[in-house]
Structures are given as structure tokens and as C-alpha cells.
Image (cartoon, rainbow over all chains, first blue to last red; front, side, top):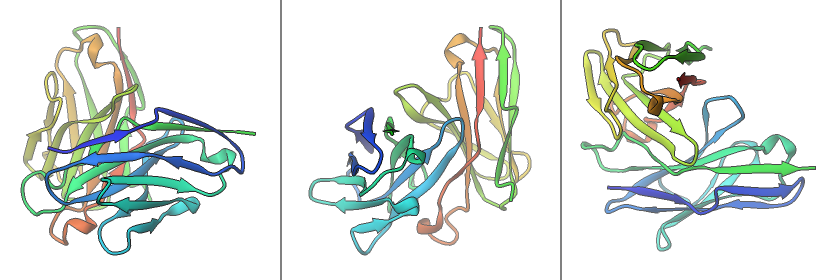
Length: 117
Length: 117
């Protein structure tokens, strides 16, 4: 079984400040990792994903995340946020191996990022 | 590009009433999913389907039924609605594993907000 922990339920920041949203996972097998973003009253959009290769992954809107296998973390970062980044961010995991439940995502509880002027 | 379309967007039910939520995707995806989103709980998988005519239970299936009679549609039914089913429901679809798990990314609809009084 897999689980995802998003350590902060809410993160308020000022515009143009850097931000880090934390995500830790637990799994008995190798995983793929994802960050989704949900803007107010909308569905989820894929922000970025880690499948293999470089542990630093770049996504849309200037976000990036770093996979750290030893710390089982996949923290999301942006060096300078905008008001329009205000949204809820979800970390998700699925296992890499074929068969079984590898196509089902396990989501964290979400982190609400609020960017203030 | 329509992507994943959910109908209706909002609905209010009385306890004991029944209703069906419709999800339609135009991406020829094999897999489809129904999630519910509750505050502080993230997204939890209700049911999913890996192909036309197949369905399976997810994490929280009780009180729900599903059908996938056509590849592009995935219906979620509530036979006797309860206040505990007040939630935001999201449908998602993904290509499937035929081209490898790395391409099996989930795409989400905009959600259905359901209140059960």
C-alpha cells in the first residue's frame, strides 16, 4: 500500500516570494510521482511528473520538483510566485510495476497555496 | 478540445433520492475513474474502469454503483443518497497501459458539486 503526506495544509506567501510545498510518500515498491494543481472551482490539472531520469523535474508555470529517493520526498518549488498561483496543490503517487494497482493514483490531502499582494 | 466533461455541475438532493452523474471523454481513453473530494481528505477513488464493460471498486465504493456501457462514458449512480455523500465528485480518464505506464496520465473533469439534505 502507498500513502502520501503533504505536511502543510495551508501555505500563505507574499507575491514574488519563493515557495516550497512539501510532499513525502511511503511505498514498498518504486513509484511514479505527480503534482496536480486545482484552481478555484476547477478540476485538477497535471503540473509535473517524475517518471525516471533526472531527479529535478520542471513543470508548467515555472514550478519544479525534486525527487529524493533516500528521503522519500517530492517537494514542489517556485522561486517567485504570482497572485495567479493561488490554488490547491495535490501530490500523488502510483507504483511503477505492471499489473496490480499501478494505474491508480494515491493522493495527498492537498496544500492550499494563497499568494497575497 | 472537450477532454473530460461532467454533467451536471451542481445538484441538490434530498436524503433517499437517487441520481446519476455522467462522465464523457473524447480522447479514446481506456481507463476511467470516479473520485470524491472532501475538505482535508484529498481525492479518494470510488470506482474505476479499465475498459468498456468492466468496473472495479476503489477505496470508498459503498453507496455507489457505476457502469461503463460505452468506452467514452462512465456513469456514477447513487441509489439512495445520504448526507455523507455530500461532496465534490471528479471523473478522470487515462490512456491505459497499452503504451506503457509512463503515458498513463490521468486527465480530470471540472467536477460535480453535490449536496444531500
